[in-house]
Image (tube, rainbow, N blue to C red; front, side, top):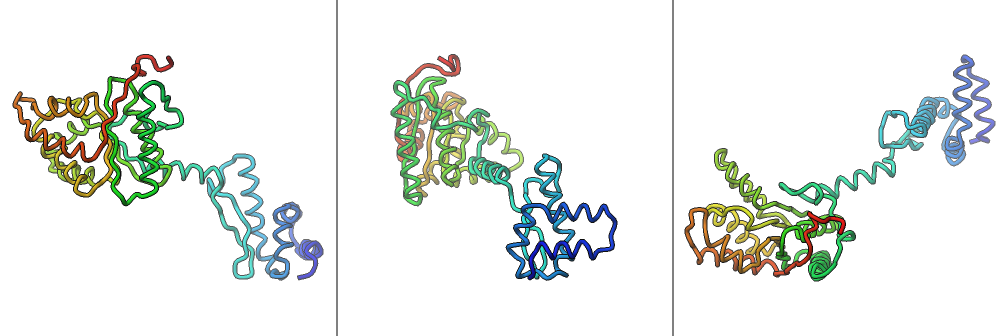
Length: 311
């Protein structure tokens, strides 16, 4: 193709068009991105092709202008890029850096399925977790679990059973673990067990309890928060929790827990004594065998951060 500047000058002189059109196209052809593109592809462009591509060049410049002025564009979140298509100039719309970041953030959130968990857990971050006092051991164990699972996700990895007093940071640590695993590409399900138990009881009437249990028991990584905080029933213990833990033990799926009770306290109280006051130690022991197989017990001691969040 002949020199691009001479070609553009010839084009503008040949067209018997109104002055407004000429002014618009003059500005288009003076756009640095347009000139660079035409120069780079001058061997592929005939004079006729350049004329037929005028509308695409104008569209390219207009969309660039709208984006620069933060005005609504025809493809929000995408920026125009000139390309060659069948010997003519065309426009491809590429996602902006901002859109890519937003898409990555959405994908990250979608890897963490949260059921009845506090809103602040959605943004829990290991980097902001204060490892003071006896919380340090829990943090180290959490990091070890994440690293081990990341390296060999198809192997069985025992989860964490975090227990301690109210507000010590057990739930936050589970959420931070889930978000870190999501950042590494793994899906995690977090459930607040007392709320989940209520939901399960409500689902009996519409025959969806089986589907709900099935979905939870198959989660690639499961974190059960606040186990032992509700009033136990034999149905929740045996047909919900028992079924979930049995499946996860058999399939060796990583499972973490948080509780206000130690494993021994959970067994002796919540799992043994039902709402009706009945004692079933054998069934409780059976459940606890699965909990112990799935997770390592870690005590967390510290101040109540819900009462004194800035202390």
